Length: 256
Image (cartoon, rainbow, N blue to C red; front, side, top):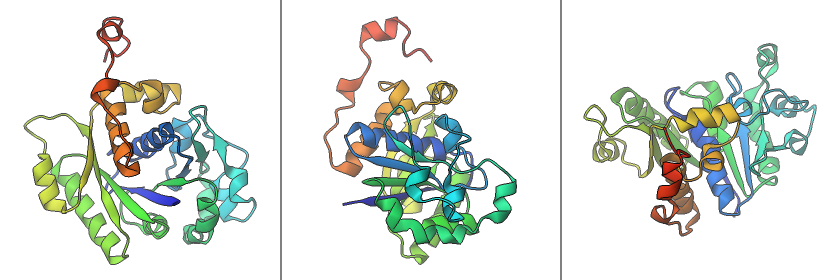
């Protein structure tokens, strides 16, 4: 069964794009065909993360009917497919984001799992992307402003009758200032799919233009994303057996 998953957030800066990319990369590790679409067209970053910031054909061309969706697909070295959006400010005025829904069937024909990185907030652009969703996964940080905005997003998704698979908590530090998982679950009334720890290796992955799951597969964050992917796919995955060996740690391969 093909699935179109929209990765959404109530506010920016919570790690939504990083999550879209690494969740897609983790699903790919389980031998699934994955396409990531940068549907955050006002401030696109997927191409920057995956070494395709400027390409001859992108999602903007598809919406303008200057190209077919399959012509905008690029394959990253990790094996995931990507449809980037244009970084050009001039292109924004030409876009009619509401036309995105017209291509849903064509997008789903391109991969078993289609993951859309949605713009943050609840503006027209975000709502247009959420209309395509077979399911929505929220991303948030364990702090009150982010959780409050996530609750607003949940209410809107429910009004659109879009199923919410759950929420992924990112940049988790496990200090006294964060909201506990129990508090988050009580406030939002949706499942917590996983907790992604704060990890400086995410910056290293961005520098190398590769998913964290691909570049540092045994890091705590990468294993957390693989746990989430396994849960979504109903696959078995033992995070403990995937930890780095003592020798790898001593070599400094996973040094923060």
